[in-house]
Length: 262
Length: 181
Image 1 (cartoon, helix red, strand yellow):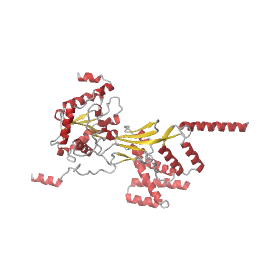
Image 2 (image 1 turned 45 degrees about the horizontal axis):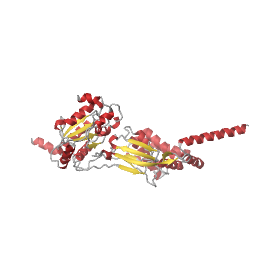
Image 3 (image 1 turned 90 degrees about the vertical axis):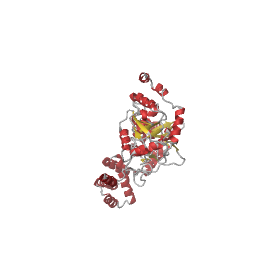
Image 4 (image 1 turned 180 degrees about the vertical axis):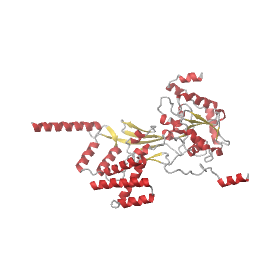
């Protein structure tokens, strides 16, 4: 009956069917969070995730992180659960099981949106078969972002949910100031030289590390433009990394080539 | 029994004291993308690179505002924004404690002013982006005349630039015809 009625709904109608928390249950939950003296049982609801989040949840149960020392225990039925952890981007076919798990868990219950997918649909947010996050129709109390959240982030999220720790992240809104200018990167180096160095470095070491190596190289050249070779060699001797040495030596050739032409 | 106890004592406690003590984060860990709003030029490179559209740019042509938005709940911490940022305004910090009770706290915003075209007066590009392009031009070893020409062109919107080019071409054509006649 439930299955028939929800599968034939449009998106707009679905959002009307989203659950609004009972005020009495919310009050109970407030009281529970204020004065919690017992362990909490967690039920995982995997709503179409890639299982990266599940692996991290289980990593949080290992002796290294050991969430059971806080009394957090994973149970196999929503009927036993105090906390429902929704992972995955909430696919269309997992909507009904997600709702059934929600209704099966006794009040008061804490719902957690886990991972980037659970919070908002993550990288799958605009797929045709995805609702985009558990909060689309389930009242969520804690959002744990991450792709996947590390075990430490998981513990932090639960600590926030259970009122042990305070939340660190705050919404920010910056407005451009009157006298706001972006500073140039390596203003002493000619622009074309910087582009050549960055391009060569990124070609050899990849985008991110290439930029970091080019940045280091240009910093060395700007310190003393007359002693580039010696300073680069000194730096390379300190690092003792043959890969870095090959890239930096190539950059020195490019640098000398540019200086020779100019 | 004694053997086991000895083994247990030798191994010690494996469990980390987190969250009561800070946890050691490995170098190269990709956590929350830190945005330095002063260094950002609102060019939108990060929004184009962002695979899950956690970073988006919105343009308000009525008020002349370009808004940079980050929705942390969608970020997959891939670091593409850090890679493509031309000014180094975004860096991935080792901060992983991002859980929130209120979804609104996952949003980060920054407003930037748009510049108006010197010819038609329409909004067309962020002020800071144009300033940055000009300072790069000044830093380059191009001849001074080319620099000043390019700097004046930077204040025109793409459409006016096109019109300017067409006008120049027409002039050239007429001059050529005058010479041949």
